Length: 280
Image (cartoon, rainbow, N blue to C red; front, side, top):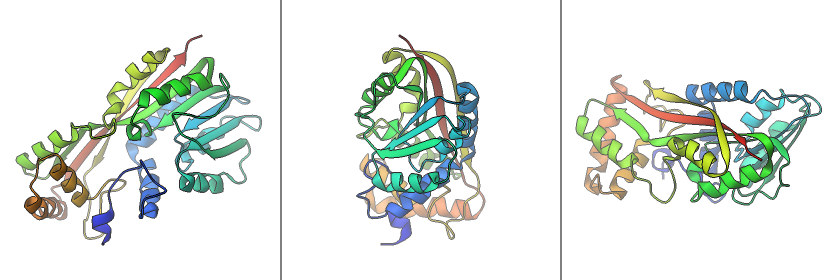
């Protein structure tokens, strides 16, 4: 099976995926999206971390966001990153070596963190809730882990905002309709972050959003746009929901690839963020 066929995008079961190296590389790529960078900068300004504070990163992935924030906590600060993937935690631990502040990464489920009550000044989670079957359970766990008056910061994707333009309006409409459908996970959770934190007993302090746009991609050099899924994987999603027949799969992928080669390709996806305070 070639790279094009295997380049999907899903983080429900990272360690059991036969192409785990692809998922880890894609995680790095999404961390470098302009939208991700903008939201992390906004988050940093909202959190105003201080030396000696404690930070918990739920669904820390490869640890890049947690490690970037660790520099604001000084030598006495503490950063604890947790992720359900042993593979990701192993990478995060290797990247944490030699850090000034106290940084640790461990394997834990977002729905059962196994950390003390009211222990952290800040609890954050980025692009994790979209992969969980019950995000409200994870947010309740984050609230439990935060001290009264502490901050909870969530950044996540709204896949219903995903759109593609390759000069074919019917193709674009099919993709748009498919991405509105949540299949087995809350993939459109980004637009519900405010409701989730309020439902957990927190008060929203600030919200924002950022849109990631792809305008250049050569399908002959890369199986997918940076940090995204392949068009073959996208076609399979359309087939799953009845927007595309199996025999149309090849034409669908070819249309998008041709547009990309001709410079007539655009995709966009919106991510949202919320910072909230835990009430007593």
